[in-house]
Length: 186
Image 1 (cartoon, rainbow, N blue to C red):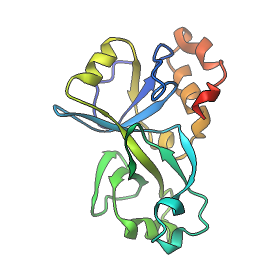
Image 2 (spheres, rainbow, N blue to C red; image 1 turned 120 degrees about the vertical axis):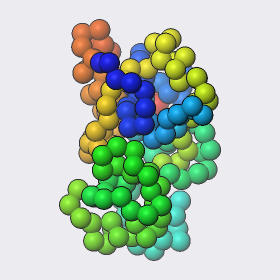
Image 3 (tube, rainbow, N blue to C red; image 1 turned 60 degrees about the horizontal axis):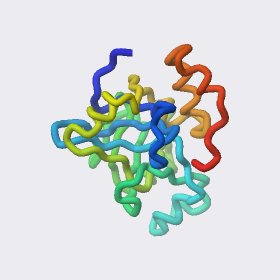
Image 4 (spheres, rainbow, N blue to C red; image 1 turned 135 degrees about the vertical axis):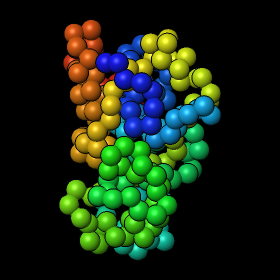
């Protein structure tokens, strides 16, 4: 696929990428520019519930939402991706219908009165690259790239996402797609 690097694309770790932080990951790029890139890992849910991160938001009590490991940078910071029908204050668009940022009022509204297809995912930490770093990793064959879709973020089973998207790249990657997920990643 001939997709340019940019905000709103998905990076898929190739089987050759051995860095344990990124092995068998699928990353949504949320920011991209001359200063570098920022994204979140879509397929690494943690055992942590969102109430452990946001205990001051009573409506979250008893909610089944897991927090995801967004990446190895600033693991103590929370990022939230929203699937919304329209952009709200304190967010910025990542791709059509997907926004990064927000506030607890947006979270409360989605839980109390969700519009159709609205949801969110929370991430601790993020994946970051300095100027030129991601481009060099692309040249070395560490990543495949494809346009992102909201379903990658909000609908798919995270554990099978890497295999699912890898299969779309044809025979060269099909044998890897049928291998079991590396158990050390869970």
